[in-house]
Image (tube, rainbow over the protein chains, first blue to last red):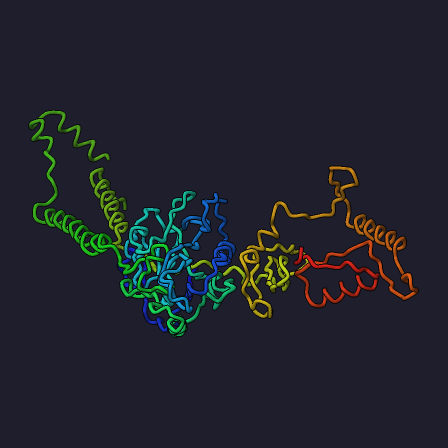
Length: 315
Length: 197
């Protein structure tokens, strides 16, 4: 399944990826949280396109359904009711107002993906030149390191096949020039798709608009800690992303992942190499281990010696 | 020429083989970096335009089915998404519309006409011919019995008030026009749309 899209990074692979054809437009999905009505059309479209059917769950008394991402629900709407500063209107007596913050959760497609960094299975996680981070489940060994590596807690291990799954940004659609299924379905233009440059410009416009309406902390969520993301949010309260059901304020790849890949693995590999080299060096200088001859074991000149020699010749 | 491999040499070769393959496992032998993206599933699928079956908004949908329409290929719907050229929602769909595929494939979907006789609790399967003939018979009988040409003052009314008609919401303009013509030509007055139910 050779694809024309370049793979720019591949998990657990030391061979550098080809970079001659990287003149590819970086894509991005922009989720304008202020426009979301929580209809979940994106969730349904995602399941329909990706041939996923999660188990029917139970009602937990809230709108979240399912309650969390699963191996078969790659995007979920997270609903959170919070009190925020009163915005707009003439009623100056009010200081606080109820905000119903709805966020579409799913893979952020980081420029520096923690999952790919942590993954020990060669080729189980790949990153394309257009920015998409994709899981190749055939290569997945189900270790769950990607979950540890992800600063957004997105990948989920399937109970059916013990492999890790997450949003692919519909890489199969994007590859042939289509927008992701969730983007297409969204009835309120909350989710948009295009080049990252265009999406940043759109986001800027929306942020200005929100600021004019009194949301002074409106901003774009494109965290630099992971090199920027290819799924971005417009937030009315970007100073407190935690309000949006625990969106990370300053996401970074866990230092544990850095230590494992940055120091531990090379050192261990070096030790392995040194051991092999030392063995070889020992062989060259000392020669093979000498087996004591029969003479040394049994003494010279008996019948046993002759018989064993003959046997050796026959073999 | 025969190669004499002693037991000892054989073990050495084996050990070397195991060691080198373990090294490959640890990433010392790079694998080819081939792409593995899921293949696009609609490339040659038959695309059929239609309207969403649910509400009166009537969003346009594209229905994708296996088979290119050649005589030996039986079509099977396997994907439905919004129609970007349709003016109503320009490609977007609500959660119900986005899940139309499972509506098409629903186990609870009615696939053939059934009749429940008056007083009976049993549904009986009938053929389309039987069903349509029966409906036509009922309509004709009722219209013949209750059609009103003139009111008490002698004015022409040509109406038929004892039968109503409930039309589908997800129809095209043309289908709506034809439905309207048929129903009003019969003199039917009670005429409504599923979207208001």
